[in-house]
Amino acid sequence: MHLLMLSWEYPPRVNGGLGSHIAGLSRALAEVGVDVSVLTRGEIGVQRDDNGVHVVEVPLWGNLPAPEWGAWVAQANIAYLEAALAQWAGDPPDLLHAHDWTVALTTRALKHLWHRPLIATIHATEAGRNGGLSSPLNRYIDAVERMLTYEATRVIVCSRAMVAEVQALFHVPEEKLAVIPNGVSLVEQNEFPMAHSTATVLYMGRLTYEKGIHVLIDAIGQIRHFFPDVQLLIAGDGPYRAQLEAQAKATLDPQQVRFIGWVNGRQKSALLSQAAIAVVPSLYEPFGIVALEEMGAALPVVASRVGGLPEVIEEGVTGLLVPPGDSTALAEALTTLLRQPKWCETLGRAGRLRVLQHFSWHTVARETLQLYDSFLTKANAPAVDRSTFVGRAPAYFPKAIHHA
Image (tube, rainbow, N blue to C red; front, top):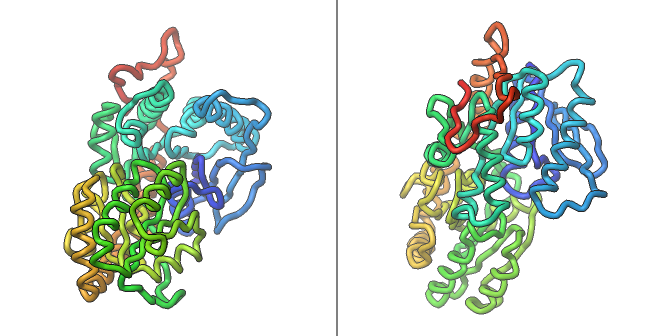
């Protein structure tokens, strides 16, 4: 099997969980014998091997001043399409796998040109990320997401919560959906000494509004007088950083909070080894891959009861769940754990065991490969409905009738 993954991110270009997901899944599939190629963006355009994965980096068009994000992504998709046709026109891959809307235009074109099955993973939705569709750009991205789910032979989502979301937004039939969770590469516990501070609270992830870091800062402000040695570590970067730094300056003592910025693998491992409690205070979270990383490092996790997080964290077994946006409930949960360090250790051990049993990349790759094989064991690839090109546009709106 020759599989072509298409993704906006791939290490070392990682903005959030998407790039880590593509790398983990691709490497695990390569380990079991799949011929995996990844088409992704790059500055100069190179081809390289990454643990058995053939990575093709595409330089984007830098000399055309796109007026906004959607136009820039469309230009990038043309560059992707040119690169794919130059690389594989004579021997197309057996299967296409698109990850999110940023590669949807290229993948749709390749599906019809090469007559290949298309799998699409929807990691998050524009409506979910923004709490609605308030701008023309939001609505355009939502339309591209809808188109991708229509064109895909099967749609993968990472949680049961995302099943409900894509069905409500895009009317995807249940039989077309597959739930396959994210995976994680575990931190080796002997790589760094597990010198957990008894009062260090860790947040890792992008600094955006929907991640709820402002709720966490408010919660730390509520408990700081009861725990004078509490320290909040915020690892990550993003457009909301300036607002968060201003909030922290007004709410907390300088020694109680540190903005660390983006961290690489070894820095992340060191932070995980130092913290006592990890917090995922998201207002919107399709899955929460960072929670897996933290559980894998034997940390108890306090998370919002939103999206896929309740499917990852077992209440009272591997961590605690609180209502999203409720800083008082979050402060109470942190107080409970800070007063019971032994229980924190118990939750952490249970969390690491849960990750080992259910969320390793080996497990995720096996489930994904079973889905791939369901198409490629057929005598021929599914026929492409060419009627979408004859006299009318595909019926994406208002209710798309999805291909089987």
